[in-house]
Image (cartoon, rainbow, N blue to C red):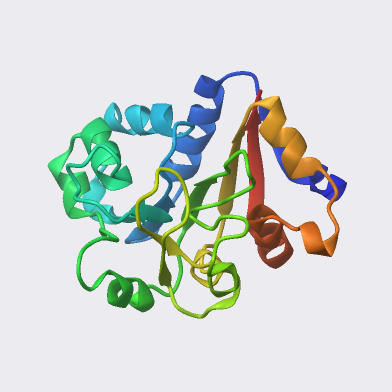
Length: 214
């Protein structure tokens, strides 16, 4: 994966990375800009930055790349955590919840996303597409927008966008924090050893930038 070097944008600090994400966010000039966000710790400071920024949320539709199948008030809920940080009723109204009935039908109606922000786990997973999960082939190749799975930590059921759904994004930012994750991303692997993040690049390399902070 050494050819990925040209995709890497390095930052000296999380604050600098957040500035770049906010610039991308503010440069979306669609009547309605559609954005995919991710859970996890790396984008948390960016969500705090959004909470401090004057944004007309009625011009956005927001959803998540994946979610734990729990109530929104549950501490494990990505949606609940992000909404608690941004703490804006207009943002809440712009949100397409993956755990509510009809979520898949709503995503099916979206022709494209203007921006997708993803993280990567230490095992090379993206969204909730994990190595060796029981329905990995479905996540990588199925035409559905969402699938259910029982893999991952903590041990709760999840919903995740398929790669097919992620591929509806016009631009994808993969956030990498730490040397260990970056080295994993850049390692060469045989076809039999490919991780979910490798499949992301195989299918969508022209759309992706890697935002790295060590």
